Image 1 (cartoon, rainbow, N blue to C red):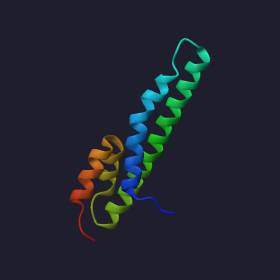
Image 2: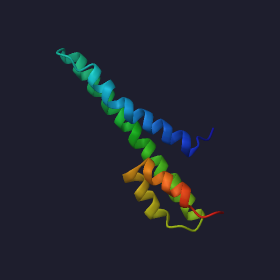
Image 3: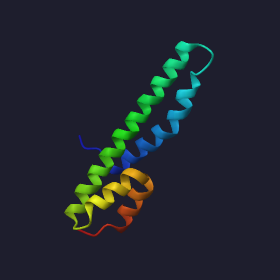
Image 4: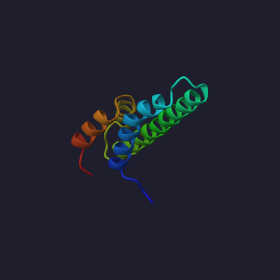
Length: 95
């Protein structure tokens, strides 16, 4: 099963928006709850990082296939996320 770039970007955005509230929701006075909240926050950050790396790899492959500078676009997508991905999708050369 292949996941589209749009689905990955929506997932990354949703996880990014949920990571901070989920991590701090458990952060009360209890140390166990603080630990659980911290672990959830780290897990969500790792998922976002993995999705970001996957989007950068997909962007590089797609840009190389279309004759664009794949390394540049991959770096931009990795550091600037959805903004760079949307710009790439709007400006990428036709096949």
